[in-house]
Length: 132
Image 1 (cartoon, helix red, strand yellow):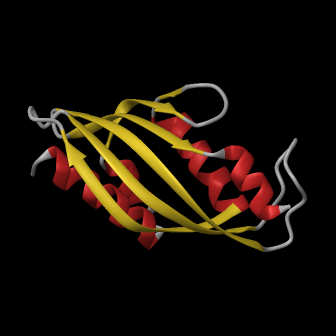
Image 2 (cartoon, rainbow, N blue to C red):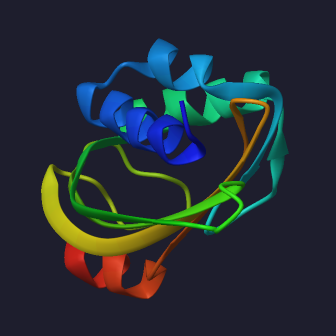
Image 3 (tube, helix red, strand yellow):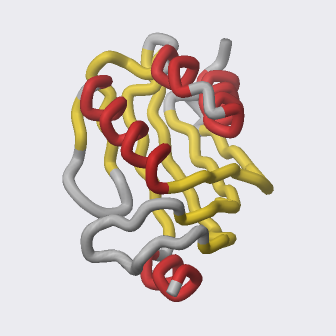
């Protein structure tokens, strides 16, 4: 399986809400670099993040486009996040089921058949505007 195949499967699992499937594709010491906040290292921290996201948001990704480095070690993904804001987070607007559609992107690194880095970017001020 190529790095591109692994990343495509990772996002397919995301859309299926198959958190165990996603975790199975991650290196135990995965580096998660979110749009906001501290870098998380390791599956345990990533699992905590995913649980929190599942409680606060209902999201599906569409219009996915993938780009692969010539050496197959890095993959970029561009997509649209279609979501529902279910539970408010500290410092963000109150949640009451607001719907949002937001462009986003991610950069992933793959080594030895496992995802070793996930970096995600989106426009937070635009998201706040969409749910306010």
